Length: 184
Image (tube, rainbow, N blue to C red; front, side, top):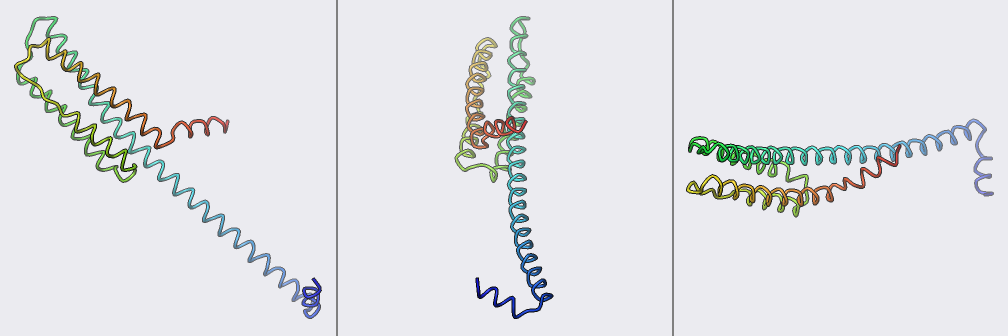
């Protein structure tokens, strides 16, 4: 303490004020730089989280379209059965191509957005799309085909729901919702 007092006594009042101003300026600049770094880190984390949410939404949207197409096919089979009609082979081929295209699109989205997810999540998603490719026997009756397709639909939907839960856990959506709810 005496050393500091002795140091100030050697300087004129103007020099002491300048030294104090310089010290305060350096401290303020340090605080500003640290605050900027922290805010930039938070901004980057928020942007990355938004990208993950967008990727997740795109993948879910594509698979929702797939399930809508499957449901449409089941309804087509049901209508054909009720009206005692047959499904034209050309119509069945178009349906198969649409479903395969939708599965492929989902697989491409998983590949595109795989960088945003944990490797375990990407593996689960890839296994899911591989499992979506099925076999359809043209020799089946409409009733049996509808039954097989409904079973397939239910099984795949159950798997999709389990995957949805896993991805929500990875993204900690429930924690985010709680946090947002507590703000208000």
